[in-house]
Amino acid sequence: MVLVTGIELVLILLGAIVLLSIGVMVVFVLVLRALVRRVRRSPAVGGTVLRTRARLSRGPQRTVLAMRVRLDEALHSGRAAVQLTAGTGTSGSRGELPRLFRRIDEESLVLDLQLRLMESETDSAVLADEIPAARHRVEQVEGLVRRVRAAVASGLSGTTDDALSALGSDVDREVAALQAGIEELQVLNRRDGRFAPTTRPPAASTVRDEGNRP
Image (cartoon, rainbow, N blue to C red):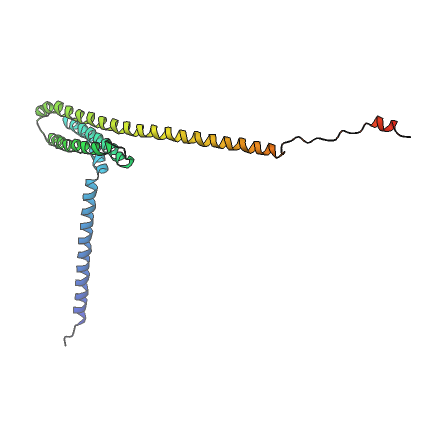
């Protein structure tokens, strides 16, 4: 039988506390890294960081970052419009627009990589030559996104017009039925004599009564 002295017991407890502390720190670091990765992948956070960098930059790099901001905002607006078609059930745009926008998104991803490469360019002359072509590509993406949004808006407005017209017809029918019911009720009330004017018997003449007295 092995006897454990007081010093050994204290050392064992200290070792257990140290191991527990190390385990807690490892778990904390892993959770923190997962949160940081999720935040970095968030489109909202990425867009905010990008706009902040564009405001704080100077020179040609600021122009490149401004184009990245325009590209990000265009894709965000197009993505929001396409997502609306999934909940409306509109025919045509529901099947074609998401597929077309995925192609726009893929090409825009390549364009964004080109712009990020231009950020690291140190030669101002080379950067100045590349900026017009990059700006033209960004404008092309913006034009495509505007056409996608116009198609979504057209589909939604057409659905809304049809629904409002049908709703107006239903309201007119209900109002006409209600008016007919009120008129029929009034006719029945007149037949029952509820609205017949009350007549009083003619009062006897006071003068005639006095002349007939003995």
